[in-house]
Length: 569
Image 1 (cartoon, one colour):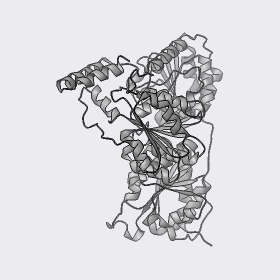
Image 2 (cartoon, helix red, strand yellow):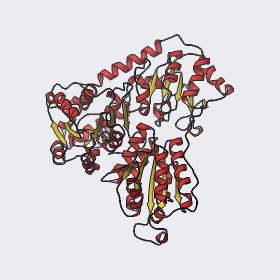
Image 3 (spheres, helix red, strand yellow):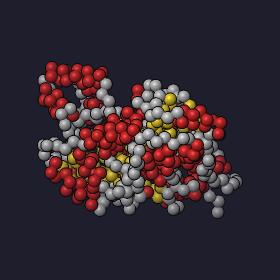
Image 4 (cartoon, rainbow, N blue to C red):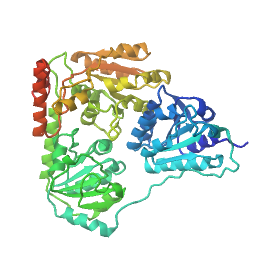
């Protein structure tokens, strides 16, 4: 019997490795979801499509396998936008089936007629419309192949009436996979080798492009005795058991990584797209390696650009550069890093005051060695990146390029679906979690045992920091929150609230041990600044200006708390 378009698309994407599709059923995708019902694919019913986009991205990011989502015409497909923009910018191979109104109703202002193609074309690796049943298998295969090859979102727009049609011919198109060797030629390597062989203070700055190149990066670092700083997206595969680690730079970083990047003589950027130019060195020679030529010199001027994969290029460099025996630069950077790390882990002297850092340190100690962690944009992701130690099997994910709120527990849903036997922990801000609160019900309905940790400071905390550093009074950031533990219980989840430091360790143990979805609501210090590795005079002046304004507005206690909890701890 001939297959219809819905069945062909489902079969082609399943053959490409997809196991799940996230979405909300309805009208123009009813025949597509029925085809899923009759296949080996799993349909994951979320309450809001944005959550489906985050979940699909989370699963695809961790598995590196194709994951699907599908939306109804108009509002249904539009609701996916933020979740899928995040998935694309984090490098997750996702295929989105964006359905449209029937072909005869398109373009005449029919209810829910929205063309999703120009919207998704901004952030996708493939965005095409199926206009004929004969195209169905070819277009589905190309969407899957492109998403996997380029690690991004592919969008397939399908009019609702096409799903039930059968093609006149159905050629056996399928998705292919590739793993090529890509490295500069010998002549292109010469300038980089000459500069490295000149010696001096050589540092490596590792980015997301090092994902499959850990051993090659560390081999080059060993040859050069070079400190290795990393971007936040490289943490999982560069930090574990790394004798050259010095942490991150930038606002999220600490002193070791900052000085390794800013004060070196030669900086080797490996698959790195760090955007903040003020943290690059002023006088060093910069060598950049990236598989994408468009990334060379995109963030900061570089002296030498090498196009190739980090894996293959580092392997070549490690064989031909001179060994550097001087370890003083490496030792200095590592000493700064460990000193700063210890300083950033305060212990409260007041049982009623819980620092978010000490909550994260306690979580780090209690969580499994192969746990997955997600964190909301804002301060939770800073504490995760600084204080959750990567241990080889552990993985972390936050919205580090797109920079959205509300990503943590939706991403955790997708990760837990893909890894049902492993611990998945969502580190949520109170603002981020409540933005998409309804899908806590998905944890219950789908029996997804995600562990949700709420950093409850009663505010949009990262925004308050931004306002204070600008010398502004914090405005419109306060959150009037419920007891999230009781709210979770009302939804059928395990729920608890912690307000005292002595309760913390026991509550974390019980929360992690629960067999099912669980939420732990922890009241943390609101007056906690994210202290950067280097404080500029302008930042001090702006914070002082905030303090002056706060005093004049009758908020002296806020200033006292700010100083006590950040500058005297």
